[in-house]
Every structure is written in C-alpha cells, then in structure tokens.
Image (tube, rainbow, N blue to C red):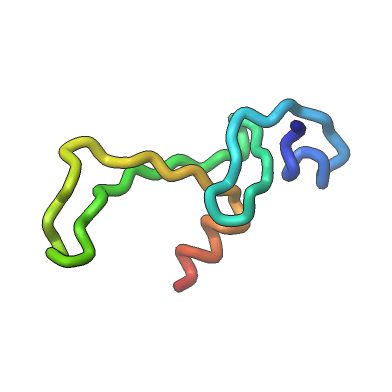
Length: 68
C-alpha cells in the first residue's frame, strides 16, 4: 500500500500506517500520532489503562477533528 497523501502529490511512498478515521494509508511523514487516555463510559473521568492508547490519523482527519 502507498501513502494516499503522497499519491495526491504525484509521489509514490510506501505506507507505514492507516488513518483510524478514513482508512487512508500514510507514510511516516504524513501520519499524525496522538496519545489518548482510555476512559470507562460508565465512570467518566476514570482512566482504565495507565498507558495511553496511540491514535494515528491523516492530516485531513486531524484537521477536521481539531475544528470541532
């Protein structure tokens, strides 16, 4: 699989990740990584894992999430 963002720019670069929102393949230069604490829905605010989860997104989905 190739990076969707790079293909849009006319380049071919191997994807190393997949966007969790849209499923686009992403190279290391385009993937956005965020750590997020997982919480229980029944107990808002209670952390259920000490180690944060990793979330990978493409630049487009990350921008859309930040606009909310």
